[in-house]
Image (tube, rainbow, N blue to C red):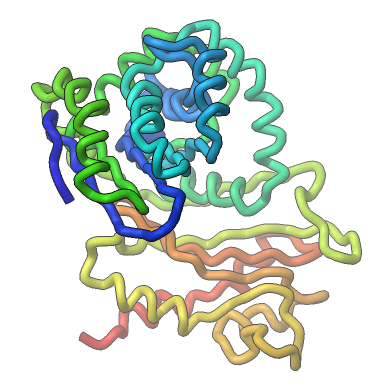
Length: 348
């Protein structure tokens, strides 16, 4: 690990091969939004690799196609990750493009309005993905639509109020040296650091005088509650065409840096869970606590999993259950509450 001018952290991992990878993580996500900036993180994600201060959108696309490889952007409630996989010989050219995409995006009103026109389709598609949609509702219930409870895909109402000025203000506030990490794999460390210094160092120098990243001040406050979406049609059916109901029961949990991280991992293994439960089938969680819970469900459970959501702020421990032909509220009794007892009686 190294630090370049401007205060950004650079980390590399050796990996033999002809390809290299660059990741640029910017600590800005929907959990940092306010009522005024709701939806900003969504637009930052969707407008990645558009026009920058030095290139039009067309020029950017031409450069990306000329380099080949893969350029992507993904976001969470906590951060946005810009990712590139390219030939090792093209590391410097890719680093230059990423520095523009991350630090000098145009974020024009025209591009924002174009994305607004696509939002309706994305919202329809989101409700058709039960796993993603269920986690959105669970976060909103757990954190009362604040910090990590804010949705990752903004509403059409919030999108209608988004302007270029609001988006730039939000991005500038969270573009700080302590909130930016550049990592690479498959590239010699000194070469990678030199390229990062060349393209990110001077640009981040403009942000060096900013206050510390607000992440430590914006704490997620667990509230708890429930949300029910009585959809006219189920977003998923089983193999027989029977509509499936979905439910998630979440508990306040621990994060990456907590001393109880390893006990949490053991708890997950004790609870078990799996997909396509069937009595006598191998590897179906037959003797796990979660299997014992869902065995009495008529027509069987389609999925029952326990997957901790780990983050520094606002972690959750949800149990997700999917079963055919049930009122979601009737499934609450089948979700395991054993996890709470196990956690309370974890020996020290």
